Length: 352
Image (cartoon, rainbow, N blue to C red; front, side, top):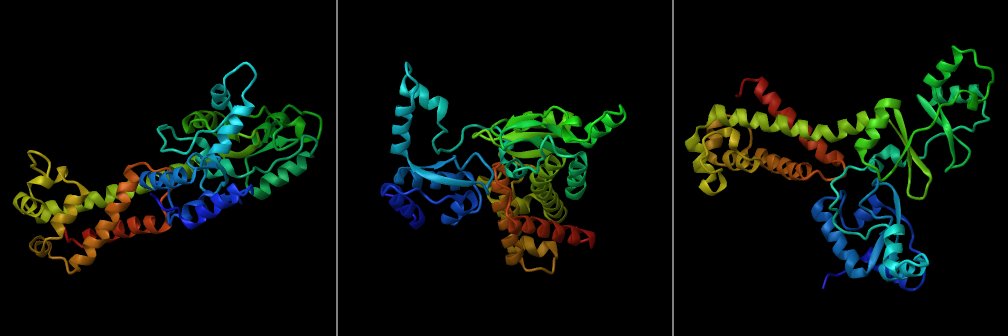
């Protein structure tokens, strides 16, 4: 029997007594379990706790930005509500599939959802259709925006005003000084849509508005946001590639095939192994952790500390290569940067 963590036990106690659970952010929810990221192993453990408690998160904690607030409900109550709300003339299961979010489980949907981008969950600054053009321009200049949604309520979008739309109407000498005279049609997409579907719209219009499951405009994603997202996603891969290339160069320059086979053992090497390029990251650590191999490197560094840093890199590498949905922590990213910098520095001094 799995013991519930204290925080989830308190949530269960409140729900069973008829109280409404206090909303928390997904980041806080993860911290209850001593976690920071929604890795595969972390999600499996959290879901096992939720299953034992008979609780689900609303909305599903897997599908949205990590600082989004979530609340909780009993799964039994959720199922009962689906039965009551099923449309007349249809089965309760049909009504549930139409109206209910999925239960918490390990995701089998490999798509990258645009709703997981931070800016998709940050309520955008907007202007009313009757606002003055000067107000819109002032906001855009003050906030360094290229466009502003034109809205009457958090769900009702009338259009978008941008430098492009203002310029196009200025050259035609349009009359009027209110925002609606200068706005273009708005372009939006559901938060649950594929990131790549959103990118297609952004490439054409430089932005896309994000509409959440409750029909609100929850954010705006621009070409700048996509650039930041690409940098955040690609940086760990590039740093890992740099580290591995340096380790390959170090080992190939200083050690031979016999040294490698002796350090790793046949069971840890690829079949018909004949080159450094075939080694795994775990192989690098085993090779460099051997006293006789370390002596051949002729580095005036501590072997144990050096290999400990590589083991930390390997642990981070496992998360990155499993394409976990959350960005690396600042500490993990700093580890990759520092190890890459150390290896580059050693190489620049002619060590290999």
